[in-house]
Amino acid sequence: MDHKYIFVTGGVMSGVGKGIATSSIGALLQAKGFSVNLLKVDPYLNVDAGTMNPTEHGETFVLNSGLETDQDMGNYERFLNRDLTHDDYITSGMVYQHVISAERTLKYGGHCVEAIPHIRDEIIRRFEHSAKTNKSDITVVEIGGTVGDYQNIMFIEAARTMKVYHPHDVAFVMVSYMPVPKKLGEMKSKPTQNAIRQLNSYGVNTDIIIARSEMPMDHKRKEKIAISCSVPVDQVISAPDIESVFDVPLNFEKDNLGNILLKVLNLRHKKENTGMAEWEVFAQKVKIVKKPVHIAIVGKYFNTGDFVLTDAYVSVLEAIKYSAYKLGYKPVIHTVNARDFEGEKIKKNKFQELKKFDGIIVPGGFGESGIEGKLAVIRYAREKKIPYFGLCYGMQLMVIEYARNVLNLKDANTAEINPQSSALVIDIMLDQKRKLAEGNYGGSMRLGSYEAILKKGTVAFEAYNKESIFERHRHRYEVNTDYVEKLTSAGMVFSGRSPDGKLMEIAELPKKVHPFFLGTQFHPEFLARPLNPHPLFTAFLKASLKKKK
Figure 1 (tube, rainbow, N blue to C red):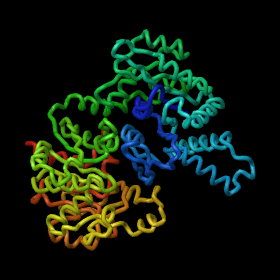
Figure 2: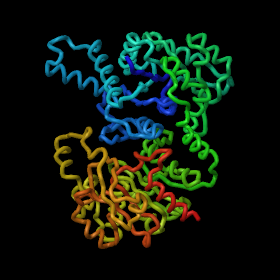
Figure 3: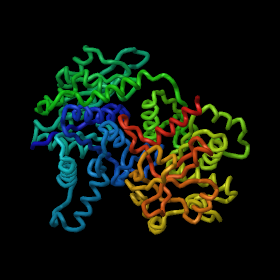
Figure 4: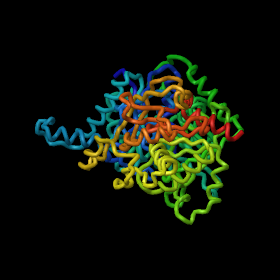
């Protein structure tokens, strides 16, 4: 086998940073001259990530192909600085659906269909197909979940089988956690030892251990883990908490992780890490910028029990950061719950709190909850000239607010919330009506990359500096063309449209009316990269900085 595979597993607990570790490994190997593709395995039985609750699972990231995936795929694209393919994402649901469908059409010739070999072999086929499609030298596979989870055993078994037949072409990396209990004040290795032994019980021996912790791991504990887990001490990598995730690949390189992986895989250097020079400049800039720019994210997917989580909007947060760093400012991002601006008893001074922000973003979402609060915030931003950026639902609500308070269509609404409204300025797309009537919710929205044509002399055209753009979509509803003429006559500009002119892709107000009041039907955050910030986010940040000054 002339192709190499690296399998990344997690130990002790979830959330230890497998996604960032996988992304960083990919970036390091790519910088050494290898062609790398990253593949995410999600063990759940959902066929894709499109129907899962954002507060439970985090953001749904959409590829150019339209596949709805886990948010780690966004990290992969951002660290590799390129687009991933439909074949770089696997769920248990995909695998089982394929095998059962094949059985129903006698593809197995009447044999008894079982987890081993059929499910295992289908997983291996998908690993190999991804490598072949990408024409890569190395495939890095992140197996979701934690070692010990029942759901991911079959994927680990597939990886183990590949290792048996090709021992010098497959490497295993465990990203584990080393707790430092406050009352003890000592880093403890026993949870990691147990996680490694659990993996050993599946027939897998780890080649490299990446030990996550609050602080750097000393040599004594590296030796302890090495002896107890049968791993060379130089292949135990310390991964302490750091201020910026952009330092992770650089820290890994300091610990020689890239060269260790090449040694394990019997590979020679193609070139030294010249490819990391630009990344290093970016990571250094993140550390030195001090001047703040305050941006509010007005959403409804923040609260999970007693905790506030931002995973539902991770790509938006990252896009803000990249543009802010490019402009030499430190982004200070505030999470604002839209529900706090709802109800008749809401005090006027509540809105005064919005004045402290340099810019306001209303991201995508679904459903009725929090909508009236978002509409109230959008109106305040429009009337008080606070830079506003609406993403997908944020654009639709921007149009509704304008129709209600400028066109005086008080019943203006979206068919998603009130299909009986007398002024449906946002209506369901024609092809979506049939899908919803059939109960077809999974993977059935307008998904993936579509072209839009920009109008010259607009804020959008100035930001992109070109007439034709391609952006990623995820929606069922659109601006109702019956109201486009009324909206434009009242001052709203639809600066981006589909090539046939039927779909409104970007809405905005001219600069002479508002410093920045713009919304997109698509999700520009999906194409923002650390080394290539998105032009619309950069334009929004520029307008926010002008307000600040």
